[in-house]
Structure formats: structure tokens, C-alpha cells
Image 1 (cartoon, helix red, strand yellow):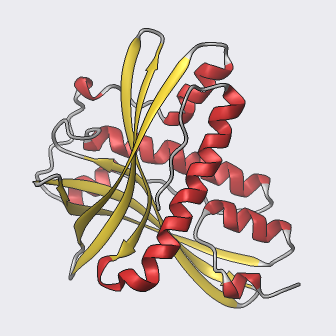
Image 2 (cartoon, rainbow, N blue to C red):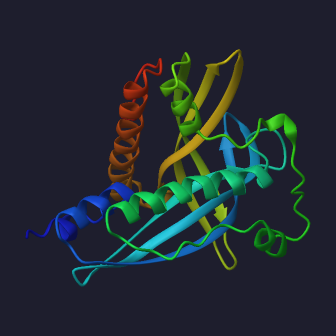
Amino acid sequence: MDDTAIINPPKRITDLVNLKKLGYELDITLSFDIAPVNFAHKNYEFQAYIFLCKYSGMINNTPFTFRKCYAKGCPDNLCPHVSQAVMIANRYLKRDYKRLLDAGISIKETFFSLEEMMVKYDGVDIQKDAATGGILTIHDYINIAKEGNDVEVQISLEIIPAVEHFASQKNEQTFFMADFNITTLGRKSQFQRCLACFQTDNETQEKPVAIKTANDRLKLLFNEFAEAKVQYSPCFFD
């Protein structure tokens, strides 16, 4: 067995699955956070809440850590409402748990809690806003295409600076975001996914890794689009 896990530590669920297939011993711990973030986008600033899961642990006694953003919620219509973002995040998380379990990696299933968010950020409006379009995920539309329906997806990529606010510190991050505009069954929907991020003040070291992580995630998603015959034009960060 080589030292791939040491030279290229995992940054995605797919990396953990592949390491397990290669025979590595994995000890994984999950921790969750819902952090308010100030985004600066096209000369317009707004606050959202990002739903983060930190994966950490040991690979053959070598430590690793990475985090994954499962959803972004806003108290207005700039993105899914915070109450919907909780459900969206948990659906993607459930999907990742299944992928890990199918690979032989057993993790206690823990999910994001709306009640926890209410306690942590007193006064946040969590009433569901029907105008944001339900709690479907991109994979629901892949399944719609698999059923023989026409699904067209227009994709735009953006790199957005932001400031995360945690209990005792501020953290400047740069996010790699993908916007998906979907047309199917006579209606249009929009999704936004965070594909990677890096510490803004460590751009030289972390940005190339973040670009690779984001593009690898896009490749997996585009493969699913192609298999389901979703109409799309592939694009990547550079």
C-alpha cells in the first residue's frame, strides 16, 4: 500500500470511498456548524447561513480533515430560505451517508437541526417561504430525466469572497459556487451549490487544491447528467 493518503489527503466523500476500496483503515468523526456568512457578490453584500460538516479522523494512523458545505440559506429570496436549507442539507447528507455505508464505512447518522439554529441565532426568521421553490435537490431532477422527461440545465460558475462568523472569530473564505438553472416539466428552478472553498489569506497554497476539488465534484455531477440524458454544457473553474 502506498502513501497516497498522506501525500493527497481526502477532500471529498469520493476520496474516502476510494481509500476504503484501496484497503485503508478509516476512523472518521463528524462535527456540524451553522455559520452566518457575509457574502460580497457583484458589488452587493448580503448575509446567509451556511451548513457545514467537518470530516476528520485518521487514515492508517495519519490525521486528516476537510469540510463540506451542504447548503446555504438566506432570510430573503437570494437563495433557499433557511428553513428549507436545513432540509436540503440533510437530504445531501443522507445521500453521503449511504455512499459511505455502501463502501463499508459506518458512521452514526447525525443531521442538522433547525431547533439548534434557532437557539444559536436567536431571532432568525425560519418561517418557510413558498416562493423559494420547495426542497428538491439537483438529484431529484436527475431522476426526473431518468424517467424519460426533458431536463435542461444551464450552469454558471462564480468565485465569491465571504466572511464567516463563528463564536469567537471571523474567518475570511473564498467560495467556488455553481448556479444551476433548470427547465423541466413546464417550470423553471434554480439551485446554488458550494463546490469548494479556501482560506482567503492562504490563497497561494489552498486555491489550487480548492479548484481541483470543485472540478472533481463537477465531473462526477456531469457524469450523472450524461447518464440521465440531462441537457447541459460542461464548464469548469480555471
